Length: 479
Image (cartoon, rainbow, N blue to C red; front, side):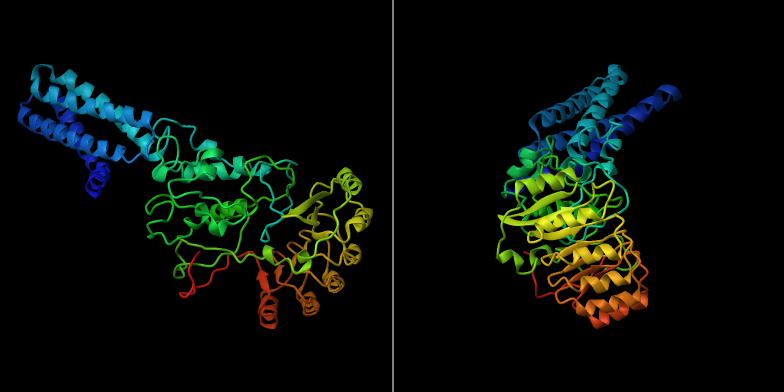
């Protein structure tokens, strides 16, 4: 078994010999026609070597096809155009009288076989399809927000109400980085990634996606292994996924790996960035090859509130909030706690916050991004005592708001991106009993203010818009 696999794996190496030698022979035939010189001996040798090497390439290719990693129809076309190349090469060698025509036919079959081989290796339409690049463009006006993902960055670009994350973000990544080896034409490890059904089915080693758990999903974990690891994907030498692409796949799986269009959206212009821990030695400053592993999962630390459930929000209240374009989403897993999102509120009015009092007990996450929220409005927010996550990106709050927010006993995460917060306001964090994460991107906080905050609160995770890395703990293994 090992010997047949080894012979099959030699095919990509052997196949380049007949390509180069046969083309060289054909060039000499053309040269002879124009210069009228006798180089038949050299042409004979080139045709013989090129044809023999094509026979060996066909044999190795036959063993490779037996692996079952390739689509039958695509293999059939590549296999028989390759065999035809060898046959016409031999005919061109033996029948010198018709060598010009036979050699031309050989070259034609060689090009066709190369095209089908390119499709098998690099994906459909690799050589001739000019639309392949443009089809991977991501429409940023349809990118969904992940309200349940902690490191989501909100920007001031309003998107449409409905989004389709799998179609608009995941498929372009898979198409450019994964289809070459895992699609209809080639399915290494019996795995295809070119449709919902195949992704759910997995490969010969079982399922690749564990809904809601990226760290148990090989679709994610194999991306973050060291590049020289045999299980790392894509294999070493192939184009690797970027940090943002890995983060996108992580977030998609974390939210449940949905294959359908969703309604809750958020306005962003840049891909989400999540914090990971480096699982290989720290790269140099000039290195662009960054490997990452699992992010600290803050979402599972929604305090102890969720251990005691509350009554569900009444349908009439949900309908009223819906009419005001306030998005209400249940956290799932049987919990009656909810998130409120103001992203689709076009004309914000102060009374809208008053309407949230009807879900005071259930409200655990609140997103007020890009709304005209001021320090006075924050006083109303302090009535929501169960609030654990508050997003105030690009609002009009100042340091005074931070003094008000100390009245929230369960607040764990606070996003202050794009606000007027200064170094003075950071002192209020000493009165936040459960604060774990704070976002200070593009605020008026200085670098020295950040450093002082780190010293005062060493356990507080402070996000400033930079990807954070740390050296791996050699005593820990990735699960």
